[in-house]
Length: 305
Image (cartoon, rainbow, N blue to C red; front, side, top):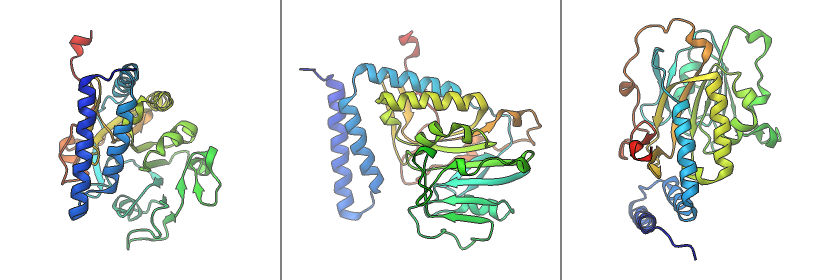
């Protein structure tokens, strides 16, 4: 019989108590988001079955991701979208000609900003019936479809990035991809990476980091970030505080984080002037939850070496 580490057992019991407490609050005043409960259950399952080697391998993979996502602060950045969730830090690309936005929810401030500037966009979200803004216009192509990898696309209820290749007429134009699709990002970035790197700027939200103990997700993540690191530089990293900070041994990481990546060639031009500080641009996704660090952190590095 495999004996559990007492501290890990304590943490597991602690999560159970946190979950029960959340459920108790939920039953009284309905102020706990369902995703919070789903997250607690999923996190607990992963923690209970994780071996020490899996934890260490996940931590090592995340440290490599941290290295790839080293911030380049030379670009002039702006914040676009809502003040909390659905707001993102980006580089204002000149000659922006197309946006593919996967995942909108109830807030389309990000999409509206560009549509008002005359930029055509495809906006996809199967969880809503209509585009959630009165500013809907002819430049916005709203599709009530799942965005999936090209390997799983039936074109009737689903859509994939490969359907929107960069045409010859867009050679000197720029394109932006925004993706917030609740863990479906992993398959798309892995299967359709060739379509992804055709975009000039990526605004990506990564979910379910606690599942990094799974070797399949870990290898998928390694491939994805190596490809992204070859073609892009990270200009913004933001922890989404809808989900708490978690750890794999000495490596602490947000379970959900947002990154903005800019293609390498855009660093060959002038940055466009001074940018506000990152702390002025980044805000908590949920102002009612505790703030968490906007980075991947390793404690006890000297002890490990």
